[in-house]
Length: 215
Image (tube, rainbow, N blue to C red; front, side, top):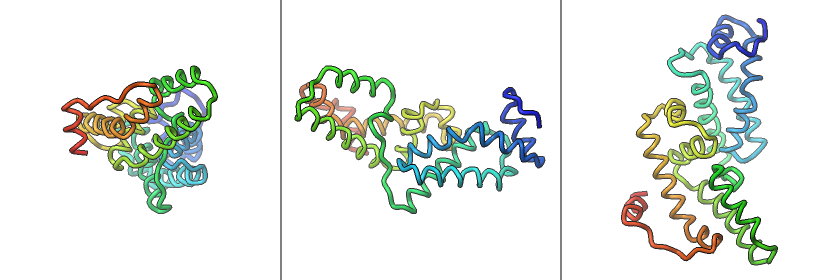
């Protein structure tokens, strides 16, 4: 197989299904970094992420004939990553944690800008450390169905359509779960966020209280 960057996933998959090992190697080369990074988002452990990486491509090698092309190959691949990551978490009885560096750019930049304006007082350092731990714990404690959508959509930056295909959900369901995950996180983090940004605590709006009560 001639290695051409213009070769599409569809062509590579077809070649692999026809027995081309070179095509499989090209698929691995094309996606191994993305698979590893996504696994790290869920597992937050390098050893586990490396095992997920191996499991994912082993699964693809064994089950490539099961890919029928009804969705993008990347969606099928990422679905395998999600399943393998949560299987690893269940086996290790670990909780997923996501650091402040993993938040969406807008949120992350807000904290970075705030960091640039505070001094090195011990109370500020303590608060920053407490906020980081609180963020990690809050995201890791989201129910799995909401945590998955939040990570794929707000952290990995995938579109609603991509998340819909990966998780085999309707786009309205993706939007609904994303909205609820954000509300749950906001409720958990509001007090720490206000303290960190130097803002007074505010009462939630009526619709937020109703949503939080249903979480």
